[in-house]
Length: 213
Image (cartoon, rainbow, N blue to C red):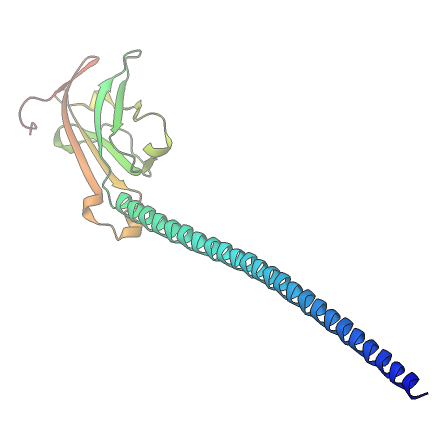
């Protein structure tokens, strides 16, 4: 009968409504899930971006630190080079004289270094009329105060006492910085020490007055 058809249509309409409601519910759930997923993804992306930026910042800081260290090392090297250049241009500071040894009765040459500049030296001892009474030094001797724990050196000063005239002896000590040649032999890096003595027995005294003729 016709009313059966109406009832069927009503049931179909009810089914469609239910299906529509279910579909709507599913759509809403899907939308919510998508929204949650998007938020979660956005949070993950934000954390990943933050972590990446942190690594980038750390890497940049490492680079800046390395550049700062390199600049500091370059400044230190420049200062060290400047100090070394100044040191090389510093004249040797020293003293040289004759004395008898405390434990021996030998006449000795004594050298006192007053700075750390290495130098070479040559020694001759004369008497009146520039007569040489010491041995002949064939080559310059060298001293390196910076590498030695002591600042005083002494060695036997061999002289021919029979050639000494009127007890007069004169020490002629010439020296020059070992850096002199590479710096063009500037005159301020070399010097001479002349000392006059009266030699009496096993004792030596500063010569009074001028050198005898």
